[in-house]
Length: 224
Image (cartoon, rainbow, N blue to C red; front, side):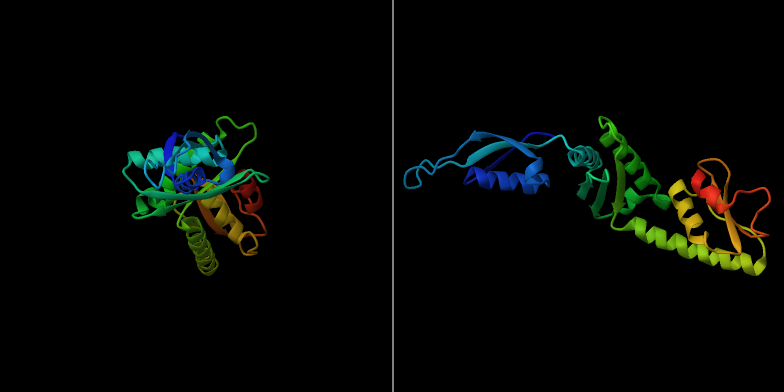
């Protein structure tokens, strides 16, 4: 990350200021002392302690630097909150700020693109794959609840009309939510049809446990 100068009454004060402003932990901080500072004599000639600080080359640091530079270019003030689970090799990031809708995009497409780009950055020099989960103010959980409600509503309609329902195009993550939600329903079956980016889920009435011309939900989920 960029090297930044921080000052304080003491070196410890400057270090604490660096940790807060860089939004990192003490273990992720690297610094050199520029000036130890001085109390002067009776306050005369006093000067603050100064350090040059930066974040270590960590998974969190790489993601944060990429996103901060991106949002700076977009003239957006976005707070990045996250944590990296080294054991599970999962990086969770949450973006907070005003007018976040522009970063979510239609059906979360912009958010998915940001997540993909961030994943490329953090995995560039990583030997083992790191899974990146990027969210904005709990959007993904709210979207998941919405999709599950949609799936149950459409399944009820299929059972009532005995006609299949074709859902709007969705990304693989959202299609898996539909498949998973209806997997235990004994009366309907789900399959995905079409090519990306227009691939969509079809909910149909189950006939003898199979759907002619389609894939069972278990196989479909494996494919997704």
